[in-house]
Image (tube, rainbow, N blue to C red; front, side, top):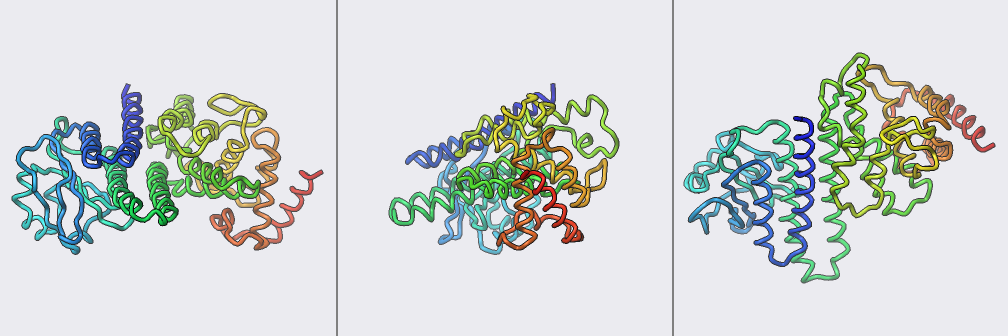
Length: 409
């Protein structure tokens, strides 16, 4: 029951997080929409009293923008200086008594009491300080679990982005010519949020740090060699970053188990593509097929994969790319149950599994990309950059030439 409750809550948090950005940026009534967003946050964590502030750098103060459950606080500002801002970690929730800036606390003591603050969250978009969220006492438990702090930090990141975007949209209305650059800036911030999720996923497994990032880069390299459109390449990059998000609800002990998994543990691990799909299908991504790529990244050409046991003709090129990228990174990195394979061993394993686990066409493209990177033909390598450099180039080159020659026959 606990696992189901955790999944439902995570889905709610994820969908609410996306709704914040869509709701705030789609309406001219910014203040009212931000108030609605604050209500979403308080509902997530059962906090009856909260406030949202926007930074006014000219006045060196945080100005009240929206609040809930508080009386007679209109016009209550929080004074903040640059040295105070520099001392904060980005979007990190602080207990009010943990704030190290004594002068910051002393200068705003009366405001903090009026606001009944228990938790203070400084909001940063990129490196820009944009505001703060203050939360009162929770109705349920007083403290936040680590998982709740992680979600709260991601929510804070999204709130920071919406505040930041409001400024950008105001500039857009005055300077239409800056539209393209503005869009790119917002897109990059969106990517930063997705990468924050990817980092949270990989943090559960001490053996797979940056796994999601590498899988995303490998998938991009293959898709680009196939001459995909840039928008579609961006989509598979996002799928690579988020493909293991379902592991968030799996017991860390199972993920990091050094020995052989028992039947129940195997079943638990195999749930993550379906869970990832359940989470991501609630989000309206601007790229097509992201959730399909994620759901089926453990499918096989011979139909022996999971969760749906699809065969080659039922799998898109995107799924085949992500499946290969994920497996190749697993082979070439240490895992709790085995040491990593050498590059030569990994390539031989991919070749061995052609037509059963991996698609021959996609694999051949992958080998071709690796050949180009070894020869220096690709100015921005996406695969070689993340592999150990202790391999013999001559041996690998000969091996790749042999494999690609066989596949071209």
